[in-house]
Figure 1 (cartoon, rainbow, N blue to C red):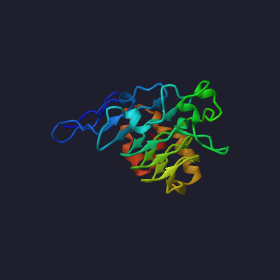
Figure 2 (tube, one colour; figure 1 turned 60 degrees about the vertical axis):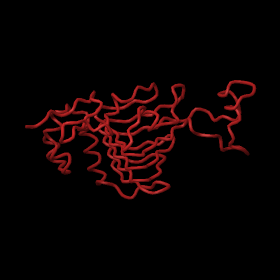
Figure 3 (cartoon, rainbow, N blue to C red; figure 1 turned 45 degrees about the vertical axis):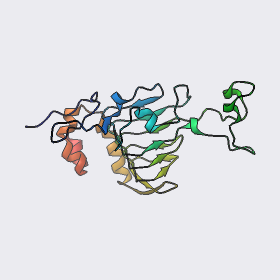
Figure 4 (tube, helix red, strand yellow; figure 1 turned 135 degrees about the vertical axis):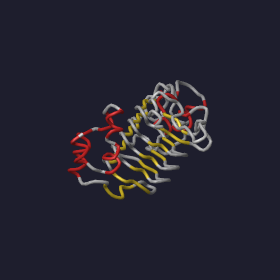
Amino acid sequence: MATPFASPDTLHPVRLPDGSLHLGTVFLKPAIDHPRIEVGDYSYASAFDPPEDWAARLAPWLFDFSPECLVIGRFCQIADGVRFVTSSANHRFDGISSYPFAIFGGEGAPGERPSMPGPGPDTVIGHDVWIGANATILPGARLGTGTIVGAGAVVGGDIPPYSIVGGNPGRVIRARFEPATVERLLDLAWWDWPIDRILASEAAICGGDVEALERA
């Protein structure tokens, strides 16, 4: 008998054959309560040693008082060991020294001291992005919808939708589809459909049948 598809508010959405929950996989929306992190429905992360604090595991330099945000779209897949190095991790590197004197005391608030960098950009992950094991996403990176990031890659900058990225520094290895097909997929925006409609189109989505998806 088929089991119902997990609600996006389910913390542990994977049930093992013996009926127990797989504690190493979570839907991130119910797992993370952080004022600077926004996560879409059904995006999940996995870890072999599941943490108590998923926000701290994934984005350890993003603090409650950080000026930047981490935004993750819907249906993203985040493997074990992935780290988001957000802008609050940065040091100044435009002068003689990159040393953050201000965080160790002295006159004035740290944010007003010359050794600290100004606010940096948000890190934005599109929809249906797969980030492979031990990848590092750098401050201000913008990963387009449908991007696949190879294991161990170090990725920064703007990555076009439906790209495959690998290496250090991360580079686009190839596009997953022709530009016209990418435009069709972005127009379809299947990730915004009701879940029942998505599941009814599972074969077309996972099989790359754009025509069938358009008919749906």
